[in-house]
Image (cartoon, rainbow, N blue to C red; front, side, top):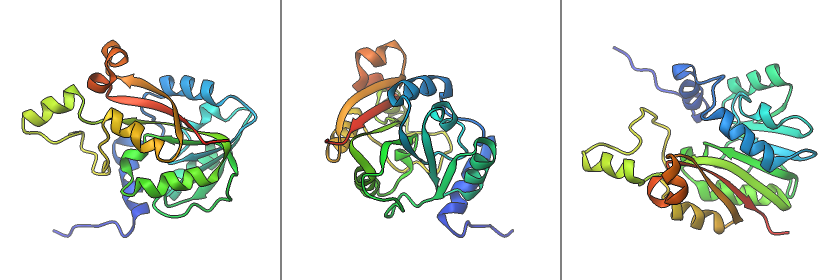
Length: 215
């Protein structure tokens, strides 16, 4: 039996997005849509990195100028066809093809956990953001109570069949990481129940974040 291996990173993500009909779906879409829309507002230039087919992007498009950047060209084509947004094929592990200080907002939603070299990505986001601009996004956290229980049972972290998860941030580690590049202004638990708001270090399983570039 022959085994087919993807030829490049774009194919890896194209296959990943197609698995389980991931296109057209977005994790906690309604919750994140309201929060992101409130944080972003209108009359902004927005770069949505890893925005795929625009399923989440469409909620904060109105009144804004949006570019979706992704490595999955098939998903990008779908975003352009369905929502009419500008698109750009980008590798988040390399220099971004955008000018310095060119965007009011960069969105990085459920993307950071997939990046093998997040320092490169955050340095590039810092570069392309305008002074006073914001990075907005979300990420699943690791080493909360549920994950610790999984490990004690001899199971791996994030046993959800996703081979593209390569970063495992704890709550405080995530904040420290962002503070190397931008000022963290908000970290909001999205998943983990009421206890996640009281004790985010122990119970928050996914968080939204808003970080500001110095003016």
